[in-house]
Each structure stands twice: as structure tokens, then as C-alpha cells.
Length: 529
Image (tube, rainbow, N blue to C red; front, side, top):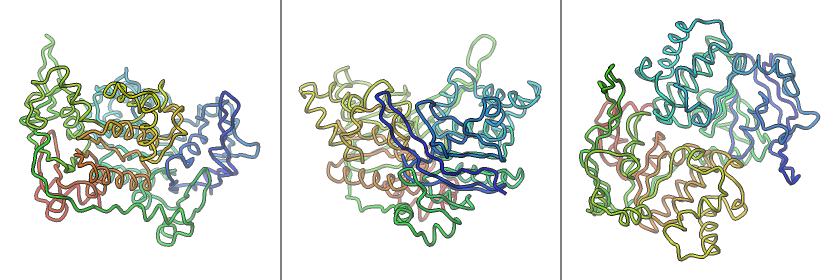
């Protein structure tokens, strides 16, 4: 028996000037009781729009459905349903895990309060019991010290930890259907495996159905019973998971499967240092006494020493909260750290304001969450060209536009996106814009913080190849931060493994993957297989 039946679903978006854009075209599929259906496809293929349609979360009335579109849950038609019916379904019978947790969590409220609110909205539960349930849910989703972490605000957590909070909220009320829109995108490989195992366990215990949306074919294969492949708003192929992966029929499905294999290119020998870090330490206060004095600290970085050679790609791997992003932000000067950072033998602490400005052009960063790193009020042309105004003031507007178009084309976009805004793009497309913004200044050193985490597999492969080509042609240096061991293996010459703010192992990529020495490194590699 089908729990969710989607039939002839079409979705169109209407702009202010009356233009209509069809995002989803005649999509039909069903999700049975206790079944997991995977929805895969490139960014912009219509996966998320399809999922949002189920709960009526599209921006109506700018969004609209065709007259014959139908979405039934337990026999109840959801398209055009009264708000009373939708309120009963949302977060209770159907839960949703969004792709970008920072835009879904309230930055002004502690995460424990937000999870407890979800519990109290749908269940009669005392504050004390809700508090205990919050700790259990956080522990279940892999967050350590839940009694402390529940008091944290979203900005105090890493991207992966924020996503786990979203997952805890989604499973809190034991829904019949869980719609998971890229639920593991921001998570490292060990937590990915834990979350997949958790979802499978919950599916079996609660007879819960799952609509699993992802660009990660490996994860879809692990969890799904059936797979629907989407392209340009249409389902081009669907069937049993093993049939889809072993004998794909559609050319696009074959492309997705082949694109999941990334190749590492040979690297030249390098020796000159471009960045050197000595005794880096970053601490955050966790607890204060009644006098307001800090009595407990969290060491995000604990005496980290690191050398990065000119032209190399150094990979940084580790679980969420291990200090990967903190290390990258410290090297970029965005987080204050004790210790010393040298750029081409010059101590960054000794630089004047003019020297620091020049360094910013040479050292760029691509952030993990493009939704929050791109100004929603600026056009794509202004976003990509902004750095050129600061560092190349002699360029005319036409010259800046020419450079912006060139770099946008490099990352798979083009001149047609210049006048559009970030909210008009999918998560993967926004990340490509962020990469273009970094590349347009022709930097010597780029810190890549999960640059492919929001991208589907075909675009992942293209971006990896693009970064490899740029590095080879310009002798550019990368610090590549990622939880995706496959991507790190394709990119990195050397790999530093981080745990609890420390580097526990540092070696060549070949040595790390073939003969890892640290038990934690072995765990990461095993979880990625």
C-alpha cells in the first residue's frame, strides 16, 4: 500500500514581470509503507521543489501547480488542503530535513529549546521530560556532551553539528514519512554512516517511510529500495536500486554513475613553503561561575603545527567539530588564534593594514554554506565582481563584467546568471558562484571549506577537475577541507587528520589510504568504503 502517491506533479514559478518557468514536469512516483525511495539528480533538476510540494512549502502564489497535479498522503489530498490539515501533517506525520541547517535554525535560540519546541507542539510532554528527550535525541544523532551542547546557539556549532540538530528535530515525533533533503551533505564520513544506520534502524522500528534526496549515489544505494532519477524537472528513470546502479538504461543515469568515480592526478615535487603555522590555539568558553569567570573551555585548536608547500593541495579531514574549519578560518585571519602564522616567511601579525589588504587578494576562501556567504541583496555580477573593485580599482565596469563572465563559465554557469540573485539558485549552484568569487582574484592560496559538499556528483567531478586544472596551470596552492574521503583522495598530495582540535596523523595521501597509522584514521577510511 502506498503511503505517499505523487501523480502528474507539475510546478511553475511566476516572476514579477509575468514570466513563467516550469521547474517540475509531470512527475509521478509513490512511496510505500516502510519503504525508502531515493530521489537523485543534478542541482536544479527539481528534486527539492518536488519534496517541498509535498508539504505545501513552496512560495505560493508565485509557485503554482497544474490542474491535474495530485499529492496524496494516506489517501488525503495535500494540494489545496486546508491549513488545519497541513498543520497536523507537518512535523508530525511528515517531517522534513532541510539541506542548509543554518537557514532553518533560529540563531537567537539555543538548539535544545528549538528541539523541545518541536516536541511540545505535537506531544503533551512536561518541560523536564522534554529536556531529557532533547539530550537523548542529540546523543542519538552523534553529538557529544548533549547536556552541554543543548545550551549552544546554532552559530557555536559546526556545519555538520547543525545538520544533526535538524535531524534530531525531524525524528523527534516519530513521523510516518521522513523527507530527507540532502541530510548528510554537511557531515563527515563517520557521521554519514551513523546517520544512514540510524535512519535504517528507525525505518525498521517505526515502519517509517523515507523519501531520501541526495546527490551521493553511494548513500542512496545503501539506504534506498527504489530510485527515481530526475533531470530538468522530469523523472527520466526509476526502478529497484540494484537495477538502476548495475544496469542503468537512460544515458543521464549512466552519466551520474560514471561521474561518481574521481581520479587523482600526478603531482610535481614541491619544497618551498607558502604557509606555516606554529602552535595555533583557539579556545571558546563553555561554562562560567557565579562571578562570571570562565571555568571551562573548549579547545577548538590545540597547539597545531602545519606546513603548506607552494603548489600542493593539503587535505584536512576529520569529524564535525574536530577543528577543520577553525584551522582554515585561523589561517585566513578570520578567527583570532594564539601562535604564529607565516605567509611566505612573513609573520602575518607584523603586517600593516596595507599589507593585510594585499594578502587578502593572494589568500581566498570558499565557505561551506553558500546560502549565508552570498549577500541575498546583491546580483551575481556584483557578488563576483566585488573583490575586483577593491583589489583592481583600475578596471572598468565592462572589464570587471568580462572577468566575472569568464570565471562563471569556468564553474559551469554563464553570462545569463549575472542579473539574478542567490535565492534563485539551488544549493549547488550557489556554491559554484562562491567558488567563482574566489577564483576571479587569481589568488595564490585558496582555503576550500567543503567546496563540493553541496554539489551533485556530476558537478562534484567537474569542480574537482576544474580545481586540478587551475592548480596545474597557475601553480596555485589549496587547503582542501572536506569530510568526503573520495574527494580528498582525488585532490590532495598530503592529508592531515584532525580529532578534538589536534592533528593526529599527517602523511602523503597514498600512505594515509594504504597504510594509516592512527586508529582514528583507520576508522575514517573504513567508514568511507
